[in-house]
Image 1 (spheres, one colour):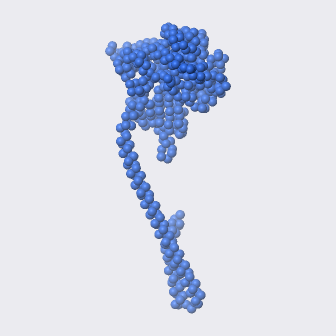
Image 2 (tube, rainbow, N blue to C red):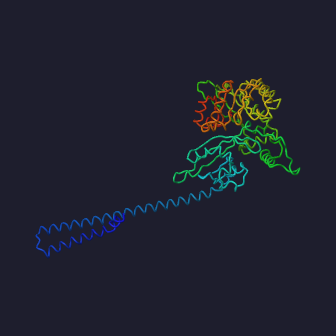
Length: 496
């Protein structure tokens, strides 16, 4: 390499030296030797050829210099233009920062940025409020510390997929310290650097809790505060939510919201998995509370509050009235809804309300709706904690022609003995079990056992939180009857 560099450096001088030597040899031959004309002619030809070669080399060098100069000029112009565009972009970004900051503060979706080392490099206000942490407890901390070891272990596989550059979307349930069970829709979006390599991923979390997912644990012992006028942090949190939703610290405004229909009904498709089964499509009813500016209050925040204030029985009746009214107004009845059922979640207070079955029967008669169009979802924790009350509720609603489903089945222990004593039409298998069947043999074996027993008992099975085609294929292989989740359909407003 060094010899080549030396050669390129001395080559111009060698060419010039060759011309000088040739010219000197020609002059010497003419004046100091007796060479004939033919030799003089030959040397003259060599000299002319050398001069022409040198002239060609110099002309080419000048052409190369001119071309390089033009290229450098074009590059300089492009760099100047890009610098101007960058300044304009920086100015626009600076002008948009206040708006972005406002969106960051008010957007209800929880957002966090996790780098390749698993550390949280960014979070918005909703993420901070959800975890009830201080900024210094999130910024730069490993996601394991932020979410907790248990949640991290359950979601570590999806995080690794995201860091491999694959977008991930799934649903999961989350038990909160106050006993409430939240249902979350989570999406991971990989972030790529300028070199195209993954530098981390954005975690987007939405609260999609429905009434049947909420189950507050009842403490057997209560602890009095140190002072009579003190409240627990949870009570203060609930009171704060009451102020945000109702405008005052009592239930009257929330009751007014129920009476004024300040809610919206949504439905999510429950589709049959076997194409030749002849089973119709069904739908789960979801409810959302509308704020003054048409913004949705997260159901995971509203349902525990309504449960605490004893309003769930009124809310459940509101849902039944509006769903039956909607069905009655389908004139002529939509052919797709002829055999479809609408799954309605019911709370523990409604299950224990002796007047609800009579209200249900009168509502069905008033709207001339067949009770078979409704299926009431009973949370599995309610079945486990108060089996006789649940059995009586199921018996009475089935007398109205309605169906009964157990939701969240398989979330904890699988106990089929609890189903004895009353007939169950559907088992909705909890999404925390469905989520792991592709990578956890134990969960897959549990799912197969549930499917086998349910089939022998003539109970239809519904897989919750189904997210992708691979899971759907495995559910078909196992023999699950129905599937529900974002991999099937997102919730849609109940039209009309």
